[in-house]
Length: 164
Image 1 (cartoon, rainbow, N blue to C red):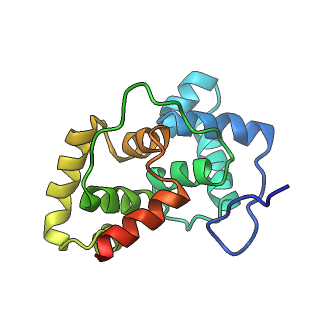
Image 2 (cartoon, one colour):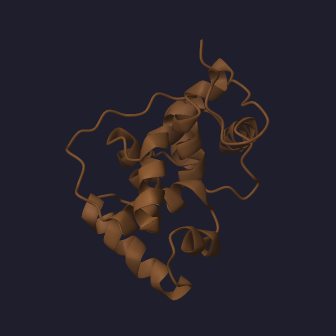
Image 3 (cartoon, rainbow, N blue to C red):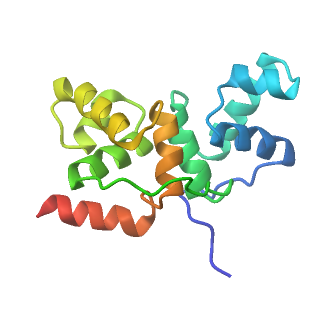
């Protein structure tokens, strides 16, 4: 049996069945407000569950939804989606930006990881959303996992290609 993939030094805490249900909604791109409406839970309860999920994944307090969703898939807490259309052809720069969005919450950190000037981030991100047909960055991460663009192997290929 292989150990679970982790993105932090401490082992990931498996989610309870209740947190799993909320995590699946997050992994479908729903906001806490939308999750509350669909499940009949109060928004306060859903927000607490999202905090509990974030803590289980060892995400920092200001961790944004795309990063939480990426970690849910990467740490195998939720099954990744199946692609409903083929993956678009993305450049190495776009793949680097995609990974940066999935792994970082702060715009400055995303810029650094994507090797972009902070002033160019918004335009590059808008172009990536257009090229992938994603509605927002959370949807982008969901689509990318369905296309297997955020696997460990892809991360190494992106970094290697970007360094050449």
